Amino acid sequence: MAAHELKPDTWVDQYADYLFNYAVARVSDAEIAKDLVQETFFAGLNSAKNYKGDAAERTWLIAILKRKVIDHYRKINSKKGKAEVRMNYNANADSEGDWLEEQVADPFSKNGDNTLENEELGLAIQECISKLPKKQSLVFNMKTIQGMSTEDICNELGINPSNLWVMIHRARTALMGCLNQNWY
Image (cartoon, rainbow, N blue to C red):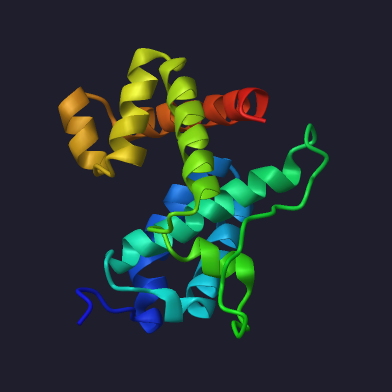
């Protein structure tokens, strides 16, 4: 029996805010982030049959959202001519699902392309974070990557919430510019 179960009827209440914050930190556009979260929920529903229960529900949804973010940047990438995303697909011949969604839905897939792309994106993000001013980098990591609460960060660093959100906004803007310039 799997350690975790999917409960799609609770996804919006439990995960929408977290997924939105994750997406908006990566695309710096609230409308695009909302669309990506919605696409993530649809992809999750469409590929629920592939959920093995090895990861927590939120972790599984984040894995799907990561692919949606990567695909978003590929679509808007002008250097590569908006080429269609292609992946090796070795599903059963009787599979009727969407090939991309089925591959995206399994964060534990051994697909070499996914591993390489995630590693490349991770390195690009880390490189861009390292270029941020020290305090912006620290605040961004604490809030976005570590998921710390605003109150805890403000108490630890001795700053007010307004200052925190200004630093996060500036960090996100700088990261978007850096990724658009250096990763594609």
